[in-house]
Image 1 (cartoon, rainbow, N blue to C red):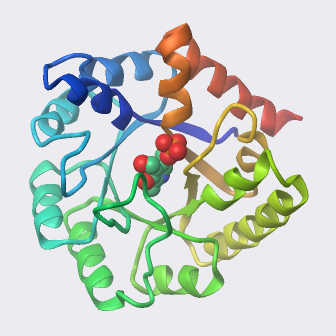
Image 2: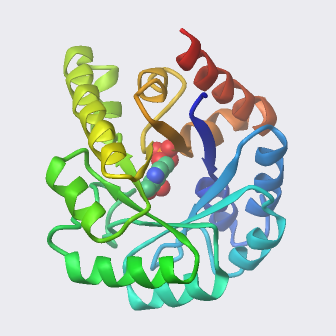
Length: 245
Ligand code: PXP
């Protein structure tokens, strides 16, 4: 089975917000991505609402037919929003106000009590809960202990190395491979994402137990030139090829 594609449409909202008007509408993007074969849609509601805004959430909940994955910080405000919205899945991510994008994985060990409480509350409401973590054995253990149903491994370090230092990127892939095996053995479903693009995705899509990849910037960037339908289709073809090669 090829890894499934969830498209992160945050950057459609970034372009919309640049003009403070209603277009391009991420809701339209969600529909087109699903029609092009994506199994789901991922959005990150940031504390500063720099791209996705509260208005988008109930509309996405209504139009998305596959998986709706809400990325959010582990705060009372966000847990309250998620309990009301009831997406299929919540991915807990770290969040720093000044960062350009999510820079590192969630430190589940350090924030164990808060992460476990949020995880249990959301799971109790029937929402799958994923933790966006680095491929680190201690973090994987902590996620499992806190009850997470899924983990999403941060592929940012691998992606940064891929074009510059291929050997180092392959070492990072080895770290990811070991973490995938560990998370699977602990009963969690394994996803990954961040920084993946059309050049570097296949070695990640072929990792053992890889269920789903969350990819945003590369797809939205390509869509500017070729349209969302083709940008999503091109990525899905790579995910299939990664499993058959
Ligand atoms: N997964 C998580 C948890 C993220 O925070 C992001 C970025 O918002 C992505 C995946 C997608 O990353 P990219 O836009 O680099 O594909």
